[in-house]
Length: 403
Image: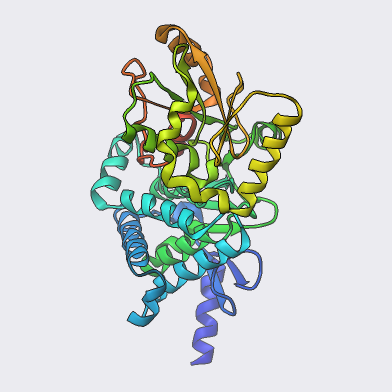
């Protein structure tokens, strides 16, 4: 029996690229330790990802997330399956490792992701790209450098790479290196063929043929230098803005508060700046902040609030103090944690022209004004749909067109 297994492995390794990892190594962070895994990666020309199976695996992932959110810590009493345990452990470890990743914010991200992982939504999302040519007969290794500013910020890239039939090679941020690998393990448990298309590395990104890299405006210059010779998408810093008219309802303002405070304002889709008419006092937005008062009790957020309040007082900079947030007039788009910038406008058409000229700095525009065609409703900035591509760059088209 042992001889037969040995011969089988020799034949298998001779035909495939084989990697053996102890899961205590850094190759697959967040995966249960003390296991020995043999990752057998077939040569790309022999791999054909099955779209239907991939979609089914992601639908299963969505179900696991929903079950976890329903039972959370109580799932242990129900005889939890491995997938629930994997997700639970990743959430617990993430919240311990990163003080900004409080359980509420991780759950918020999980809830939004699960809402997109239905068969209908995934089929609808993928259908326009199948007609442009299916690349699954020649999958490419796509290196994905992920940010770590909010929980699971790189999930959409992870999803797109696998749905496109390419192979995912992930370089995780140290701030968020537990949750996506947990997703990978859950997917592989449901569809083992995906094991050949998912790889994580904490060290230098290697063995890739195309790149999707997300970072700041500073790191993007390094990305251009290192990855410029490969097919690539490189993303820089962007922010959400809100355009108000002074007639927003209490519900609108409560939604705006969510757009500002969710993830402590650290996401690229969070509103960091508001534009208000000349004849409106900006403190009217405070009416919507009631449900977010507890944010000030978060130690790191409160430290930022106290710091910037002191800076503004020392430098005699005028600001509005909402007890949980500081509002100050500023032309810049990107505000620090606990601070929102505002700017006044006279004419909506002129403001539209100005914002159109600044699109490389803007991720989304939250407003009720119909003049903004791609506007986002109040309270929805951090609830993107599958087709809401970061920076307006169609990730799926890029992946499907890889030669």
